[in-house]
Image (cartoon, rainbow, N blue to C red; front, side, top):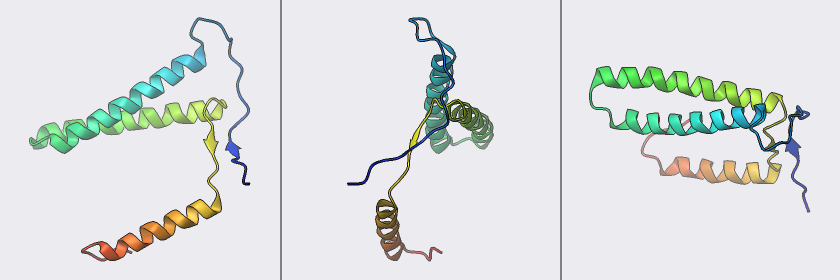
Length: 109
């Protein structure tokens, strides 16, 4: 049985009290930025006016960059952990999507 390995930095300790701590605030901001980037993505898909589209694209990029910076901060402080994928699952997924390429109407490298 394969055991899932966590990829995580040492955790920066924060007070465990009913009040929000630094980790809670950053996590709340990260969740908000993720929601906002998803919403801006929908708005970009629906924008018919080119000027509005360009403004939304700029705001989307800024929001996405903010989300990435918050993620990096959380990961650096050990507040965000990832699970290492098993090689077998990676290989299976690769094979699955490689098979899809033959179904596409254009050539994919």
